[in-house]
Length: 513
Image 1 (cartoon, helix red, strand yellow):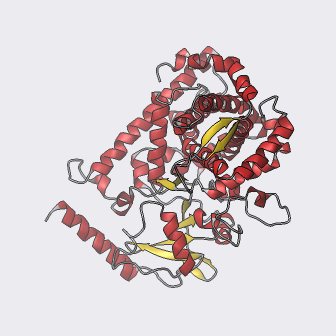
Image 2 (tube, one colour; image 1 turned 30 degrees about the vertical axis):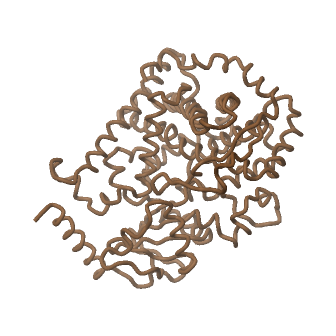
Image 3 (cartoon, helix red, strand yellow; image 1 turned 60 degrees about the horizontal axis):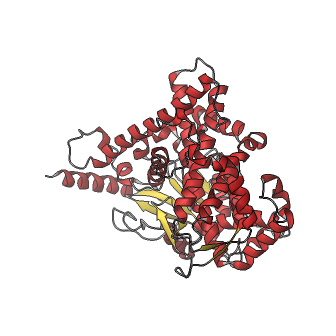
């Protein structure tokens, strides 16, 4: 008997036990699956949210799938998600187990933490750092990243390297805010390691390595046993994660000791902690910073590319936002966060960007106890999936949902769900970095529209999507070219003293990164 035969027998026995012994009564009805396997292998690996949404048209706002006999309940309406994930957040604040995340050491990052003292402390640090007053410390960083992106686009109006330019701007924001050093080269090891970590973590959250969750005994087997490649992969990622956290922490600690630490999330967290902190407390501080550093990169990149694509395809919307900006700026200066109250349409554009292509189309939780909802039974331990894509395309919430319509958020008489209510999580697990994400995107959007006009390149006829695993949704390609509409504003960017010194941005203390 081969190792594969043994695995198949164990899987089949486990599935049969669950099917025969499982508690099926009053579960939300759903589509039929295959014997024993259920829907394992039927859920698409690419854009699964589209498949879930199609099933919702037949089976309703809530239905059950099965994976080897285990129920997976999919929620496809905001009302159902609100009732369960938000109003009952005490029962649905845990994440489904991701064994790859445990092997890779990701349980120290906020996206993988379960409720408890560690998560409470992490959220407290974010709240202290990103309240309205704390966030203002980073406005200059957001302004710098916006100017950097303007310079890059001004030298590449055909947007041939658009993703590289966006990656650089996002990387500067992430590194500066997280640990105080603005790495401006996208190929820099810190940048590339952070992006790779973000991709890997996204795939883990999205269930790319679900085989480990279905066969949790694998890590206990000797590493020479065939089929242990995934376990070895997790262990390698743990080493890479700890190395990245250690490198960035050493830079901050060195600067703090020298009294020259730039303002950053990590330096402020260290300053608030006791000098005699325990080793595990210091490790937690490092992981909190890594959460901000790598965790925000992919959502920011996705939202910026979606915005540029939408502006190119919707010139009337673009002109309206630019007219609003021109009335405030007069073409004489660049926008700042202080201008935001006078820019309601641009704020609506930001909201519509998050709805049009939801960054996190699927969000999973685990039931901590038996529960009931609208007569349906939800067993303890059940995985529930909030289908944000279905919410974003619900005509009962958003009339004409496929149409780009920022003005839908300006009609105060309409009781409309703002995408900020679901784009970055729900209830107690809502992303604590939301204020920073909002501010960064607004500053970038405002600056880009003040300086440029975006048009379709003609190479892509409609919106297309690609997925990073099963957790991140993004535009396949932002189809646009740029035209400078305010040359004097480009000149303002170039005259910035810091922009002139951009090549020497990285301090000596960070050279070892």
